[in-house]
Image (cartoon, rainbow, N blue to C red; front, side, top):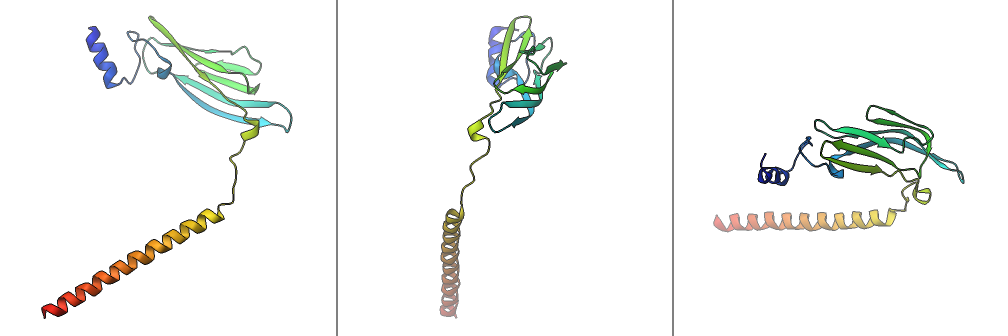
Amino acid sequence: MWPQDKCARRRRGRSHATSEETLTSEDILIHLNVTLSETHNGPCTITGTLSCAVIGSDVTLTWNNTNSPGTEVTNHTLRVYNAQSHVTYSCTARNPISEASRTAHIPCNRDNTEAPVGDYTRQNMIRLGLASVILIITSYLILQHFHGMKIYYKDLS
């Protein structure tokens, strides 16, 4: 493959990595299926799976930081059991000419564990009022249109 052909293919966007291409972190996909659990002042822990994937041939995937307690690797899936949330896990993809990694950050967000729940009554009342005004104006315009049509046809006869 000529260098210009490779560049043209990259510009079109590639769907997979082969052993002839340089890997980047964008080539690596990490799927998280985890549950966070925490006590009021205790540690935040993670339980679940992290799957790593790269589409292509001759690419080897490995998980880093798997020596942490409560982790187990099977194929490209990292199983995590009650692990600390501050630990980061990295998936590394290697082919004969390059290596790239992507890191999965799983923050506990002790202060932001739930989205804030607000009182939306005022916003909903404003929306309802605006919708009512739009409905009234639209109805008025439709009535004026039909009234004008009635006068137009009356003048024709």
